[in-house]
Length: 100
Picture 1 (spheres, rainbow, N blue to C red):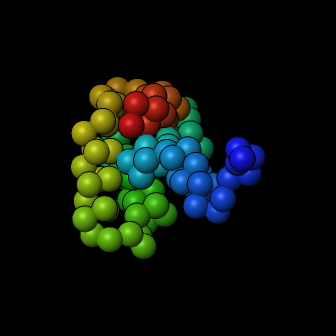
Picture 2 (picture 1 turned 30 degrees about the vertical axis):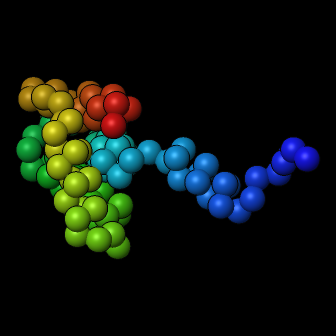
C-alpha cells in the first residue's frame, strides 16, 4: 500500500531542508537591521553591530564548530559595501544570503 501521510521524521526532515542555512540567516538578519535606517551611510562599525546581533540571535546555542563554520561561510559571502547606504547594503546582503 502506498503511503499518503508523512511520518514525523519525514516532516521534520522536510522542514529542516527548507530552512535557510545558518550563514544565510546571519546575512538576512543583518540586512533587516540595516534596513531600519536605510538612508544612512554604511560603515564597518554598523556592519559589525548588525552581524554581532545576528550572531547572537542565530548561533548562540549552537556548538562551537557549527558557529565557526556558519560565520566563516557568511563572511566569505559578504559583498562590497563601501560607499553605499544601509538600504543598499541590506539588498546586497539579502542577495548574498540567497546563494548560501
